[in-house]
Length: 163
Image 1 (cartoon, rainbow, N blue to C red):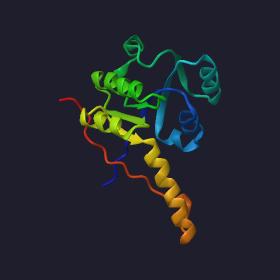
Image 2 (image 1 turned 90 degrees about the vertical axis):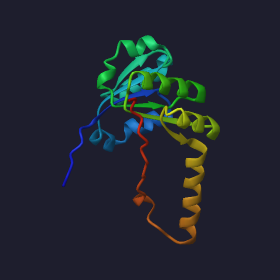
Image 3 (image 1 turned 45 degrees about the vertical axis):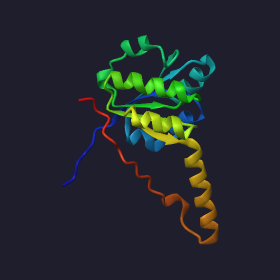
């Protein structure tokens, strides 16, 4: 049986380099219907708007009034990609309160990511661990050649729904 999933409506907190790389990847449009980015830096906002087909809200991602002005019932996923783990945690807590079903945060500190996971705020990605894993994979490929472009990412989704 084949299941056809609808595209995601995505809200991203922070408009840094990771967001720009994600939005410039043409294959993301196969997965995402609408992208909304909350960015506090007016210059970054302009840069992200130039990418096209992205709604950028200038503001602080921890300002709850921003979420009150969005139709959060239509948001399928929130990505907290801020440079501060505590801000990302708060963004995910806000998204949890609005019952956004998929909440993903990128953290620098493994301990903060573990706390967020234990609080059922989201799916944590620990940036240093991911980068270290990629470096290890590259070194391993130098010892025995493998095709680098064929990596399949598997993410175990832990239920985030509030019941």
